[in-house]
Amino acid sequence: VNAAHVPPPLGSPVDHPVASTIERHGKNTTLAELSDMGTGDYRKPSFIVRYNSDGSTISPLTYQSHRIVAGKVSLPSPMPQVRPTPAAPSKSEPASIEPAATTLIITMVDRHTGLKVECHFTAMHNLEVIVRRLVVANS
Image 1 (cartoon, rainbow, N blue to C red):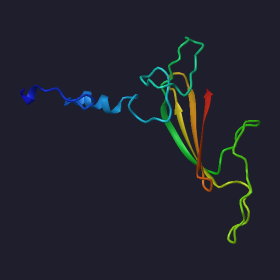
Image 2: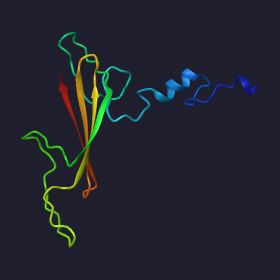
Image 3: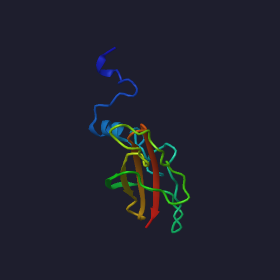
Image 4: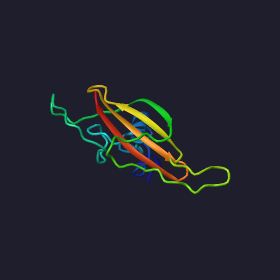
């Protein structure tokens, strides 16, 4: 068998610039935190919104901005949340009521409809926990 006629193994990139780019960067092959509806991502969507104007459910989200906030962002009452727990006092620090935390907020937007999704990731410093949630706003 001539080696020039042997097809590449399944799953290997093809020696074509467009095909190899699509294979490596398709929405279904990346490890994305948020799965949106109707944009080529075949995983179960993180949320589904049906628009009254045309009945569509496609929500192509794109990055708009991010910010880092000291502490954790409180949820509206009566939503459950990580509650303050008294920490064991040490010689260098007094007992803490609120756990030390840092929150990353990534804002994604659907530019066609104005739908905004905020992805909140809160790292609880002393608890070795990351708390995540989505805030969806129709603007």
